[in-house]
Length: 292
Image (tube, rainbow, N blue to C red; front, side):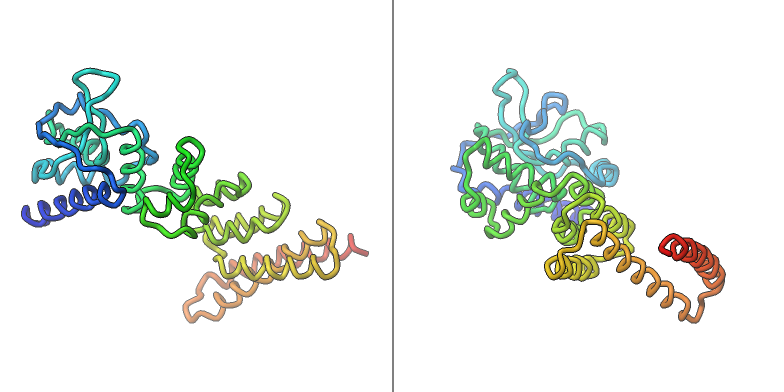
């Protein structure tokens, strides 16, 4: 277990980073008072974009062992006297509940709704706590409901304009590709490439390969580029485009099997691949018969 002083420093750094967000967002300094507040009187930030909180068990155990060595920032709940809303620190608040704390040290200030929205989003983005689509939806909310421009969002969040535009572009992806990004947040580039194909039927085999980890963005880019080139040059029908995409995927799989067979410790892989090749040969004979 890390030493007590190390944990204090680590949690202090978290607080310093969160506090710096207010400065980053140009939130005006506010009078602050400190108090220990019963955990049941603290409520989440109503504008929190983050939906899931990881490693709560681990943080809860740390709090049990080391105590709660930092302060949360809250504001008085405008709709319930005697209650408070978090400005930042929801993960620590949840972990403190799990650790059985009765009260939590807090700094209390009269933050506005805009403060809660901006600080909460900036905190999540700076710590990379949001999944890509969660972040995209939160950014779109700023634009739709609060009248922000992309330029203003970028300035307020300390990001460049291209970052904001790329995140918002995820919301324009078809549902099947948004589902892929939710399943694999590291598939954003591949999903964008697949989105250049026009139908779900064209998406499906590529999505399956990316979701399983068997195909990376570079390979997708190559397949989509070749597909687009052929479409532009000879006006293939949708069926022919699908066949061309399938053929490239089959070729990639066979190349991967060839590599596995060449490994020095292939072992039982030889038999498995041999069986699969027998199946493929049988299917090829049927296709040849059908094709005449």
